[in-house]
Image 1 (cartoon, one colour):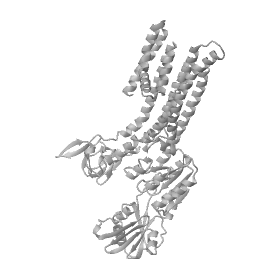
Image 2 (cartoon, helix red, strand yellow):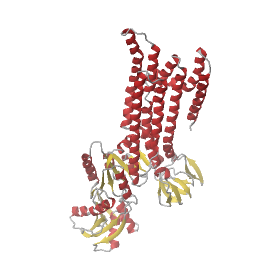
Image 3 (cartoon, one colour):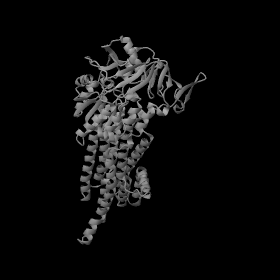
Image 4 (cartoon, one colour):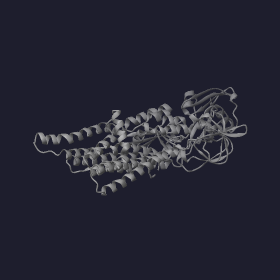
Length: 622
């Protein structure tokens, strides 16, 4: 419990004791009034202060003004106990709200703990702690056991086990050694690491994640915007309605019916009406529900950029997957060389040299299979043709490495491969020289992810890939994905998503799931973009609306579950709060509901709505 909450609790306890004691004392008149002012000011001075400030700033109509007018009016009418009790119970409701916000904020603050306080830099043989902002790119920092990695980099000395749970939501530690990339925010569990930084602190993973989370609340959902606009109209409307209730019925009775009027009865009804009408339950619980949803998601390693995306995710009926790195591990291996007329080693050498400047996973697998140092002076005139392959001059000979489209473009007849996998056709000096077969493997949880998505209510799953049709069809069949489109260029994926968007109904939403590196255009075009396996990827954090902090596709279904529960609770609170308030307003206007019923309609409904909202924090994986 925070210091502010403790102070509020002490004020509530002191005021409660004083009210109980004063209620039993046989005192009347000004003495009774003066004594009741003590608990009233203890419990309500901050509300009165806010109400006066609002009036001075010409921002009159808010819950503080309603509470101030209602309680001061009740005290003027001589209902001291009720007037003080209304303020007391309102503050109890505020304490519940503060606790609930703290509970949901805790999950996000745990994520905020990844922010490093310092970096160890070696100066004259001694370690000095410096601000991470002061460390330049390319510097070598030392990370001792128990310390956080302050900046992204590559291990140049040592080996250790890293705890990545704050980033990924997973408890499985990760072993790192010399040559491995490491990202900021992880905790070094054992061993001393020397890390050469590859970025400045402001561009590191931890900075981007923290910025993403801190700004999440700025993007409001439609429900939150509705409640904000509703409160602006609703609050002044009920204030004028309350004034009308206090004045018009007695005037009508006095002037038209010529009857005696008890003004005190109608003023009391108007004050009761004011207390009942306070929109706290809606104004507090709706944003809190989304805040709790974002907090609950971050606890599971799912970063949601705003509550608007959480709302959209709940209506997702189409999920479109990229293949490589999303549903497959993206770790390619050369599994065969076929139809070649030159030695396997020579063909692999030509391919590795031609692909030497590419960072594509397939290119990396060819270079790994070659296993020798590449002399860049042997390669020139490199031309990378997107979605086709690469053409380069190797040792003065023109070499082409790519798919069948590239061979057709060059007018070279190629041989089909009867094995399932990615095929890299090779042409040397204008002649077809065979092909290299490269295989990828499914992620262990890919099949489970598709099943869980269907359980959450997703109507259609689609896979888009630039890979060969045979490979794509095999993977789609294994995963039970309904539709698959293969041999697509990056621009073709956008066109295909456009087609799928035109097929769905208005309320239905389409989510695209990609690895965030080369899928930025599609991530941006979909109703909601989800970046998979995006830890440390700038493209993912920039283009996606939701970032999954590990590469587990099962988290997509978890994110949808959280969003659905969040929306369900939001609507429960809206219907419950408005329904109870309308019913009690009617009873208050005709004199059936008194101030105690008003307290329930205001504070009771708020407490119930807030407690309901924090249920979003707890979502079980189905």
